[in-house]
Image (tube, rainbow, N blue to C red; front, side, top):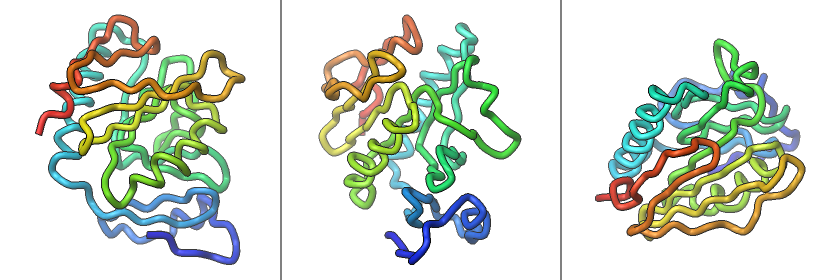
Length: 186
């Protein structure tokens, strides 16, 4: 759901939103509200969080955060991704309340109400603001689409699609291999 405003909203406006248990975001100055995620969404998020955290405990090269956690990408873009990874090199962007800048990796898990926003609007914002990798987990199709940059100044490459029987990995976390069938299980 989006509330259209004649002026672009900012983080100051965001701070005035109610603490109502819903996910509030500002994307390109517009307010979006999303209901709490479904059970399968939460299972996938929990599994990914566990796999990332287990890896980071033995390879302390960064840290993860999961929703709700505010990511300020610009004055008019305050997003709450499902999961983010921040390398030690970007850890200076962390504050006591949020991340002020692009994380290295963002994971969004699709739901019927956010599918279009995650695939198009958010992808464009993440690409423009310096996110290195963007994963879109589609629980209905049991796939993950991974968008990557080849260098810091390039746009995202065409997505690499990982199917249920494949192993998901990322150069951001060398040696981490995740069986997709363990992530998207029902």
